[in-house]
Length: 103
Length: 472
Image (cartoon, rainbow over all chains, first blue to last red; front, side, top):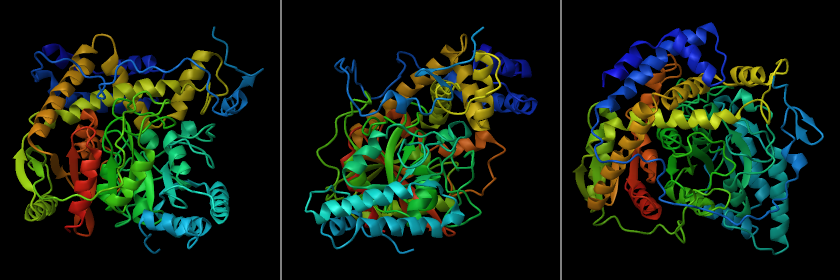
């Protein structure tokens, strides 16, 4: 189980920046510095799970026991117009959401 | 401000014309203004509330049938989509968001005649235990203005305790209804996972998010649950409900309650423990069979939660990309910069912290060691709860290890702040219903008693809580 300890030990500013890039966040210098410390502390706390015996157990991703909940593939009129749904969009053109250039 | 009558009495008075819905709403709006210094409220929905009240009074005078919550004012945590004011989740990134539709929970309450009068403060995106993570301001504890009201539903709890409304609604992902209820002296109810639709509620951690009421009494909380509960085609995780949660007459005699050993030991404030012990003694006197129950994996619950929750948070918050709603960085030169600048300027520190942790535990190479491991320990915890509930009807413990802490006391240490959820997260991970009811005070600050039952035994749990309330 030593690989986890290894992960912890090298939680550097570079690791924080790499993670921020994956999460599409740009952090200030101050944020990078404090996250390096805090994330190490928080991940150090959850580390206690590594020694727990889970032999023969399956992971749980939901607790209702419900499976394959489907509904009819029909249009339901909720009384909301596309215009109303677009009212919070920062930029709209011809009833479409307008974004900045991709490349 | 005078305390409100029971919800059933208000609704009955309004239905018979003895009381006017408009007067209820006005009383509520005045109480909100009178207690403005506590900063529990982000926005009032005054205009819409008064219009709805007038319409309701008119319908009643025309002899039309109205619902069970006719004319009862309420406050919604500001992560519920509702008409009449912006829905911000107390975050800068959602400032100015004008909901195009309402949460199912709000719709169902309105269908029964309840009237939303305001939106309550919370930790932004419900990330926190004190409302100090609100991007706007911190709510003050109604018993001591130098202390936090708990969180994240701190505004909702405070609004109820200060009699702004007879009830409020909140969300509970790791304790966000029960912990502030405990800190302020309210009743806070977390239903079985899936019992109340989450459609139209700002998502935090989808595998543990639930919606529930905060009120002065269990009876009132049950009335509110009764109006909100049940399946909804807009939320495919909703489960079947009982016929009614409103009839709570039941005897305590012969009920089996297990006192959770792990919650009564180290880390529990000795004065809080004394109050809980006194409550246990009274339940015993009333004929409850008390035993001690051990759930050995319980001390691991917080670690499990602080992997699973941020993982789901990072996923849910990815939709805040600055394109479809919320804050957008206008000067971005391309789409990628628009994403990252909008998110970086829009999100507060705690949201960023949780996105970072979540991204880490889900990232390739670490997924098995963190996320999958946490999900598997979650199974272990569920198995232990199932076994406990095969021996006892209910579980009991404190809601929080201490009374309300000071404003600023934990803000520099995120891990210490997270530890205030230590006794509440297990109910979320296992999906069981749990309630916090007031059980005495320590130095003028309320203590909360937490009771839990097996999944879908919400009615039995509410019956127990109501009977217990009457003992002290």
